[in-house]
Length: 213
Figure 1 (cartoon, rainbow, N blue to C red):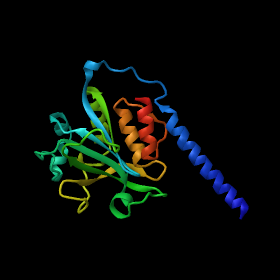
Figure 2: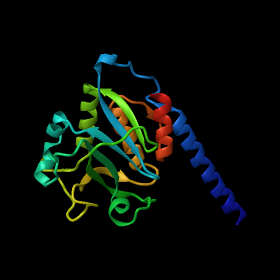
Figure 3: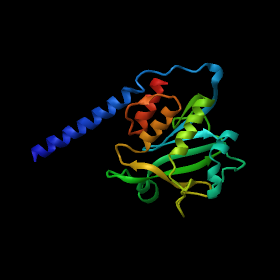
Figure 4: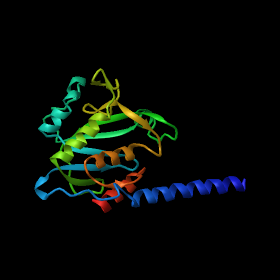
C-alpha cells in the first residue's frame, strides 16, 4: 500500500515538475528576430477557458479567401456581423460527448465559430500583434489541421452548439498530456510567437506567452 502511494506521489511530482519546466523553458529556445513595427499590421487573440483555449483571427478579406473551403460545408463565413474566426482543436469525446479530458488517445476535431466584437482587455483574452506573413503562416497551420477527403474538409453531421459554429474532422490525436492547449501553442509558434516547451493547461500557456512575447 505504502509502495503504491509513494509511486503515485512520484508520478504527481514528475508531472508538476514537467509542467513547471514546460512553462518556464521557452520554445523556440532562442527568440526569433523581431519584425519592424511597420510590418505589424494584424491582431490575433488567445481565448482562455478553465481547461481549453481557442485562437481568434481577424475575419478580413484574406482570411475569408484562405478559408473559403468552409463555404462549401454551409459554414456562414460571410456572416455580415462577424469580425473574428475562432478555432479550437480538441478530442471528440471532450467536445461532442462528455466535457472531460481523455486520459487515453482520442480522435480529434476542430471547432470553428464566429464572433462579433471582442472587448479588450479582459482576463480571458490575450492579444498579440503580428505581421501579414505571420498571420498567413497561422492561417496555413490551421488549414493544414483539417482532415481532407479528396481535397475537401470533412464536417461532422449534427454537431454544434449553435447556428453559426461547426465541427470538422481534424488531424492528429488527443489526450490529456498533448491536447487542445498544446495544439494552440503550436499554432501560436507557427505565427512566430514563443510559448513554453509544454503547456497542457491554459494558465501555463498564458503565463509562458506573457513572459516570452
